[in-house]
Amino acid sequence: MTARTDYVIRRRLRSPRSAAIAGIIYAILTIIGMVLVSNITNDLPADITREWLDAWSDRASVAIALAPFAGIAFLWFTGVVRDRLGEHEDQLFATIFLSSGIITVVLLFIWSAIFAALMRTSSLAAIGLADDDVYVFGFALMNRIIGDYTLRMAGVFMTAIGTLWTRSGIMPRWLAIITYVLALGFLLAAGWAKEARFILPAWVFVVSVYILILNYRRTHEQAGADGPSADD
Image (cartoon, rainbow, N blue to C red; front, side):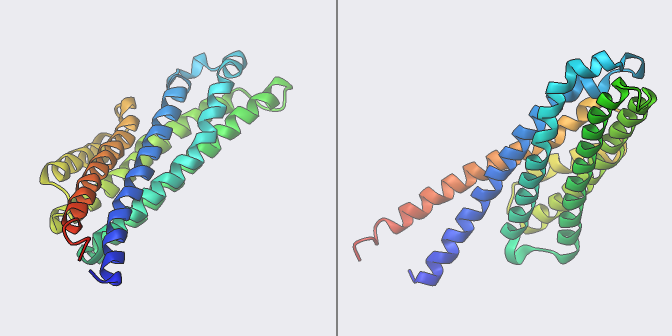
């Protein structure tokens, strides 16, 4: 085995591992953040008071702090998965896949920035510099960003990657079918179910674990293939 061939094999084995680790990190951080703020963003406007905001401020701070790292991990997952396609990449769907992934992260950052601004505004409201109605508007805007835009862009992201997987054959058909079904649900009914925001990180987690298992098997197969020739 030449040094060039060995480098290519090691790079291909390393890429899915990086994607899997990044995807798992994204899924864990996002699910933790969504669980922390689920009661905050789902409560009725009438329940939003200054005392209520003070009671949830610590959880909100943790969720806001986790959001940038979750976004970075998702971008890493997107880039490495695209790199894994290699010569099987279709320029049209790869462009849609990459751009929709970037937009999804941008919307996540906007959601987090609005959330941080609302929590900062609570201190201004306490001294009479802000009106309580700003919270009603802010939380309504946050829910629209997640349900109407972020998850629908995630649907586009999943549709593109499902198509690339189907055409290239690098992932099993059952996973591509699940991806298509979830993507269709995001595109048509993302804003109807509040629990839908947990589906994207759950999907990324499943894909990442599968890639990690696949990488583990290929690593051992490659080690077994190289073993007999080690003394040559």
